Image (tube, rainbow, N blue to C red; front, side, top):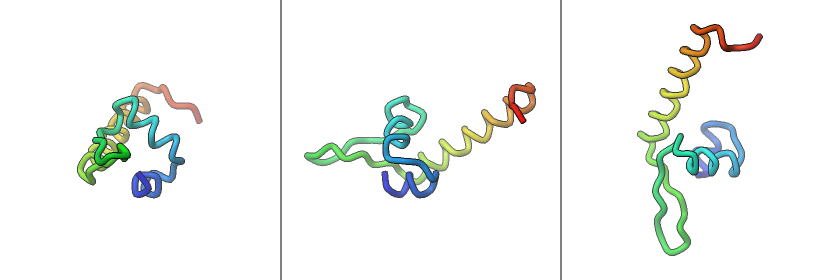
Length: 64
């Protein structure tokens, strides 16, 4: 999660919210249930976010 936070420049709670919403695929491992996100899953999530942003821009749904 720390790597995700750094890569996306977001807080721990924001990273967890992305996982819980399903926007970022992750697995829980170990006895403490720590979240793990594969680099490929993070890159896929970022690419999806760029596609959604491009669609919103094309549809004129973006402010300023």
